[in-house]
Image (cartoon, rainbow, N blue to C red):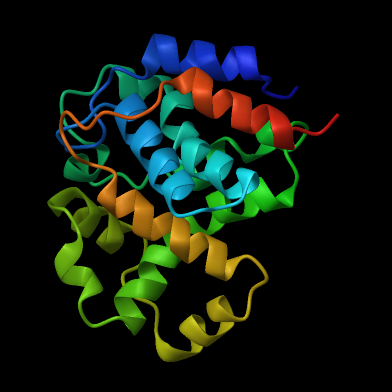
Length: 186
């Protein structure tokens, strides 16, 4: 099974209004803001699509729709970065999937290598960082930096942290699905 654009749109329509893990925006608002930041930065269509879909795993976890608190407040690392990958494998190439897979490790990397990054994290991101293993040690950071998709994952992670602005106007989902269509596997 693979996700197509209609199924992605349906997921956002049916589940995207749920609050984004303790933040002042919904899942859809967060995804649109992240994709918009990527687009404004001149990212490739693949990276814009990765930015749009990086948290799709949250939408696929049915239990998230009924939680009254963030999973991190309950001590849960939902490993959302991996949930959507099998479904995206048939639809998108590695230039979309790998930044999604690595965006959590990119947070751990940034906390280890940029002195000011940790202070920019939201309270929920701080809780999830602890659940995800905390900042990388020097050796893990070196290994991460050497990965082919590390730079894209870091860019995605930086937009991810910024994409939490209540009331920010962005292009609609259809705009970014058009971008995604350009990089879908045929």
